[in-house]
Length: 157
Image (cartoon, rainbow, N blue to C red; front, side, top):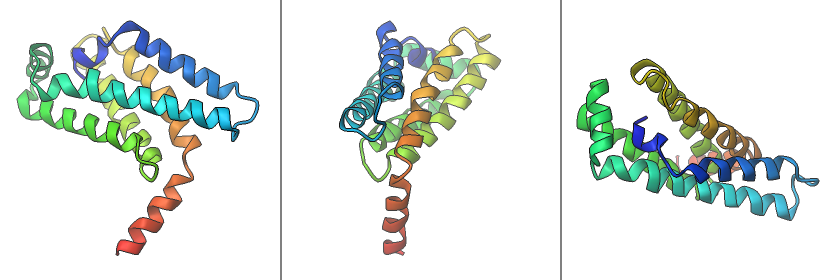
């Protein structure tokens, strides 16, 4: 994860955390308000990954390019991570893919945490850990979409 991803607007992480807490505290987890809050969380995360994280990598913003040069991945690694983040952002908004996207982005954040600890002395290591929490909530709450995805895959085969 580059410093670009970690240096997103300060309110973004707080907003994501607040929405996750609101969902967790909802009296009816399958109620209308909980579904709306969860969808809102997915939209906020999708915007974060697309605009604040993937876009700087895909346009080769100097801060992103420097970070990837420092870890030795170069522009190919930067573009690859940017594409993965953008794909995850889009998939968070597609009902059949939302749970799988949340798991995939969580795995990407585990990698980002390791990179932050290894190459950047843990300076922004908390950011990927904070992002894993709402992603895990989405993966769990939307786990029913996995059956729908499996049906779609089997029908195509």
